[in-house]
Length: 281
Image (cartoon, rainbow, N blue to C red; front, side, top):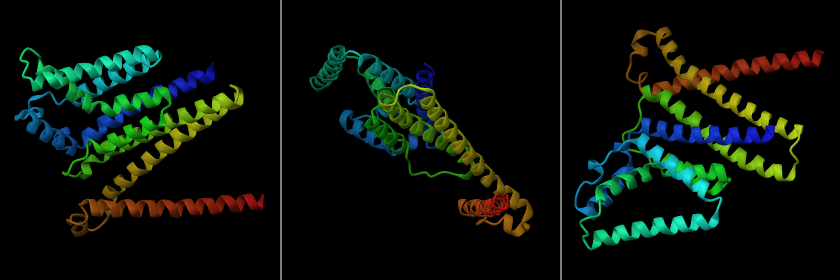
């Protein structure tokens, strides 16, 4: 029973991390700057001869909630294949009829609300796809969802140094989503071979502890590395610390490199001292 609770917690945290990673992705790269939105806007403009996307509510939160609803509905309906097939056929038939209604200029169909819902479905597509992968252990869905999270918000504007903490939040939640979702798929399959036992629960606890410590420690070190840039700025001469080269992403990358070089030296000295004490004992 305890193992089942641990696996359920892994699924829940993976779902939360999935939504957070998509939220951070659009926080770093706004929806209006994404290449995906530009391509979708160009397609709809040529189809409807108007800027449909610009007239819709472009809320990312609404899209994520719609994706959460669709993913939950998909998981619940999949418990009964017959009901799932009927609902899928009904949805496909509905959108086919809407398309033919547009082609034959049926005026009583409310196109604007349907366009808004469909747009939110596109925004929440990584969430709905990822939820199916998390709760049904479908690794293919996890891969598709991860690809959409990385590709859909991409834009051409680039990022500034001030966005380091949203970027770290995205990396933390994205890695947590991938590791927990794939870890759940892997360990739930192992449970079919290995009986639920104390040893199996210890393996799960070890995996979760190692994952959280590793990811948290990496994020802390990366944050300290970027804070080290400000520390160097207060130590170095004024003419150097206020130069254009030092205050660009290039200078910050060099500061991060210096920080991790110092960290590796400290780590090597500590390891050598520790190994020397072990040999003496």
